[in-house]
Length: 345
Image 1 (tube, one colour):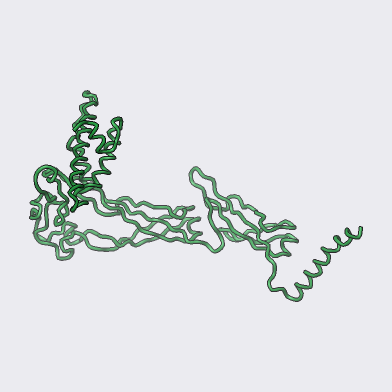
Image 2 (cartoon, rainbow, N blue to C red):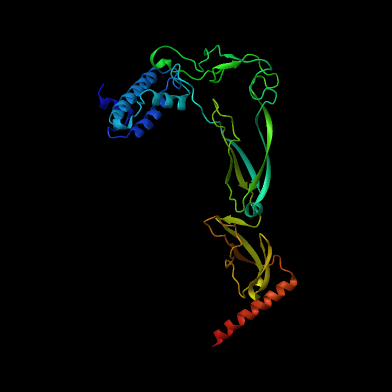
């Protein structure tokens, strides 16, 4: 098979970088892997072609690298790393790699005003905790481990020669290659029990909806002594009846009566810190906007604080009392008089 055939199988051009070839190889290997296509012999054949093409292209490209840098040939090790990363499979006898634990997620809803001003919160997370009786080993007192009989201590199940030597993780020992000889009666050999852990969080001022707080190392346990995952707390800010947030600005609509809008005067306006008195101009119209600079959400290290943006909404009394109707009829009459006089002229 020519080198052009190898590039055609992977669907890349001869000018592609090794990184681009590897990315394409990963995609095709995942698509045609026999474990994902157990009843499709054509997929297995295509999978073998993909592996062969990748190894040939990789070998050709790595030979072009300067010898002075003493590159280690990745012909097999890179392939094994890719297979372990995506499929949990490896060559017989190769060591299982460490991997990080899973990240946990906790959703926390906080009040609108608390998100702006900051707060402290306490959360309780249900999660596996190390068994205190066996200290996470899963072993009964005085017992030890024994090789897994299903994989003969290798951590993987293997088949015949060639590519078939690749096999998935052993389900019985979960890839560890060993099982407990006598299980801890408190955790049934799992080494962990479902429990609850408390965390105290500081929610910084100005926290926005969807913000995430990361507690490093508080997620799932890593494999083969790999680092533990993280606990991510996702913040959900509850809506407010009066305020809405846009960026760092706080928006609200201020209802004023028809008389207040016409005459003007001092009116109280709610803010996050309480009420503030504002002088409403005479003849205020619906849609007029007044700002309270710096009264919005606090800014970050490179952001200015937001403003409170107040939009006026002029309201009319409903229903009208007899006295209100009389006064409005008189006002309407007075407003029509200049028009009548102008018409007589």
